[in-house]
Length: 439
Image (tube, rainbow, N blue to C red; front, top):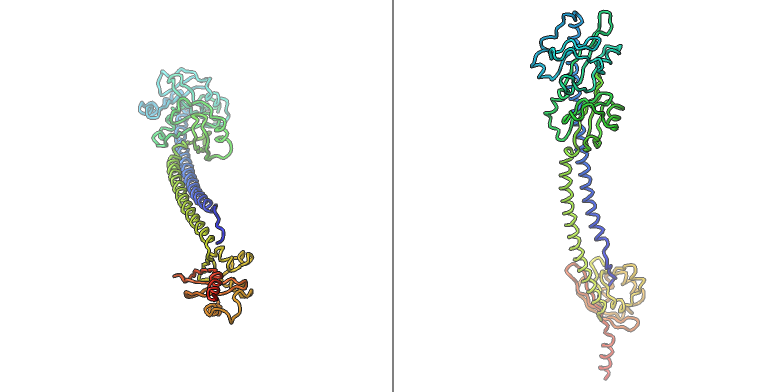
């Protein structure tokens, strides 16, 4: 019987390949889920930033319209000017959280919707007053957050200059807006652990929701400052916040009309929570499947080992039998030829090395006159040689090899068309029979 391979490396290579394909599929699925989550977060934050930009722009435009209206009335007759009744309304003040005032060219507050208590203050040292006094342009100025001297609260100053009849600087009209008012609408938006911010083009934080107060007036961290104020006017990026050290996805927009930048941040922990949950599930299932594949592999390996041991035991048994045994399939192939059959038939090693079929062995035997003279052949053998190929019925015959060995050959046909042939050396028996007959 041919040698059997004891080791089956292909078995574990197959198991490894199956597990590798499984984890490649899990990795691809997780990559897709992560990409989808990131794209959805980018889109959501960008849409919120766009909405916030539009809301802030409308708010600033409304404030500027009020300033222009106040300035127009004041410049017509500032000596007799009184702020409109709506500006002095307590309900208006409470709703918008703002103050409205007029300061003359020396910085002295001459009118305020807060009444006499807010008048006679001098704001000539304030940045927003100095800017308008020194500026040659008639533009809206938005200040950095300052602490009100009367309110003792943070406020952002929206300022327009007043002009004398000759066009010279004649003071300012100011709307002092509570920073929280600029983003109060967004306090009701559910963005988890996210935040909304408004900064000016100098990088100063004007508003941050939530927890805007501790950060109002501070500079943006350098990395955020560079991304928000240089390069594209809008965009989305991921960063670790220097403010709260949280991993965040940030979308921003620079206003076209005003020196403002709005932004929305989403906490990566909130964005990727479904992904993290799915990842844990996928990895858990993957580990279970990998373990199951390994267990099945071990069982199959054990079965393969048992089958191999059984085949080796059979091979050892066949190779140590006194009879030669060969199995011939219906197609003529020889899956089994034991060592004794090779010895009895005298088959050369070079013939067996090429995995011969049954007919190849018969042809070799004919070429080497293994079947003797035609006249002296067993009739059954002669009939077999006249029909090439394996036997098609149970047969038994004797033949004498050129070296004098007498063989009895029996072939048993199996249900699938294969045949089991046995070769028995009966040389000594025939000699004994001859001697007995002579005696």
